[in-house]
Image (cartoon, rainbow, N blue to C red; front, side):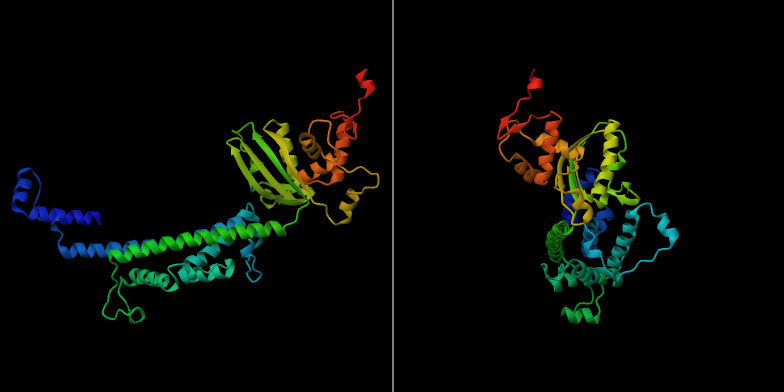
Length: 393
């Protein structure tokens, strides 16, 4: 629009005989060519065409955004896509050619997105409502206006802007054969698309948060741990930190993404990683971290450890309280050690520490006894430290 205005000003300037003489005297070409050859009708026609093309691209950009947002939800949570009625068929060669489950996920989501793209706005609306329970038609500027924009886009692309009887009757423009997109209509369209996209984005983020909370509440784990990892050799490719990292849990195949809760980047070479799953899963993955620590590739520190007692017989045997010691691994022991305050401790310190760390009172109590036996801490009774005379001597 700026260029059109400048062309108009230049034409008016050139038509003035005194200005024309000035231009001729100073080497400007004032012959009727280039911008000066544009007449009023040709500029008006070009404006109309560019307005139409801008509207087409704006509506297309909106649809791309809606499909991409749909894809982003799939990356974060698979809950809305778990449909029993949908069946995908793969032969053995195809399955064995997949490098990881990510390849399989790509096939599924790409097929979903192709259906959205080919179905257009109508299919996008239906899918958002069905899978995500998000009603796009109630978002401003409303159902009728958004459908109008899409129908205009369709006529511009497929009929060069020529209207049909159905369109003229629907929008009461019986005297217009072609689509007219003036500057005001285009501005309104762009504003409406922006509002629609922002509101959709809010609803999608809310849905992601809702699904994530629901997933956390529904998921059960036996152990949840948080490790602090300092990378000592950043030049190495640390596969065990990749979400697609594959490892064995006894004779079962597992991937990090299946037990990964969060990865928090603290600096370029430091992060916290939170994983949750069965005792076997967490232990199997920890073995890879422990190996990297042994090779001085990383520094590893257990920050948090939460255990959820299972109801099965095996776990009950593990947590027997009748005089038998509970097994406590080195990580948990270290976590309890670094969280114990200086002695003398207040009465019931094991209960307060157990609540803080999400462990049972018995586990913390046994751990404190082990630490005292290792002479890391001193024995105390009722808040009074008991001095070992043999050691004092």
